[in-house]
Image (cartoon, rainbow, N blue to C red; front, side, top):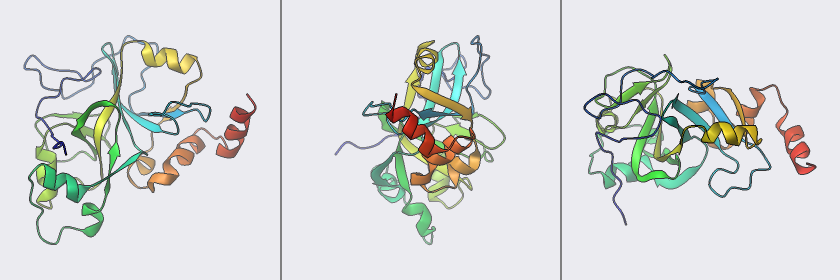
Length: 219
């Protein structure tokens, strides 16, 4: 079985980088007519794509290089405990059961042998992007080292892989009614049970998920 990795430098479309190749500490400006950073992408019920059908994607970065996001409602069969074993991190004794049993998300099809962490900002990590005052995105292993030591972020979501779009690609998919977009809610991102996140994201639009499904079925 392939060993999961979390590298200190992960060049990714949409993530600003400094001259050393490390992710920048702040968002680069976007030339798009709209910027979807800190938004949810909600797959339309009619989407039949085997990867993105039924998903909610949290957008971490949207700039001239493209879009970077993480699927937040597609769990894998891997738990935090298994991930720590694969990357040779020893868990401190007494770490909360809810942490070690937390499922790892399938974040997307790009770099799907590497780990990525959405979490509440706080401690400084070597490769981290602060999206908002409530959400940061870290690609370096030090955040998982902190978790293993019992000193990690208060709220977090760990994924294997991420979702990426080249410049203009996501905008085109939205224009073709592939996605709904809405401002993200950290409660939906971090606190809700995984199976409730899709409907909760739709409700942020003021839409009844059942009515949307019926409309898609009759399209």
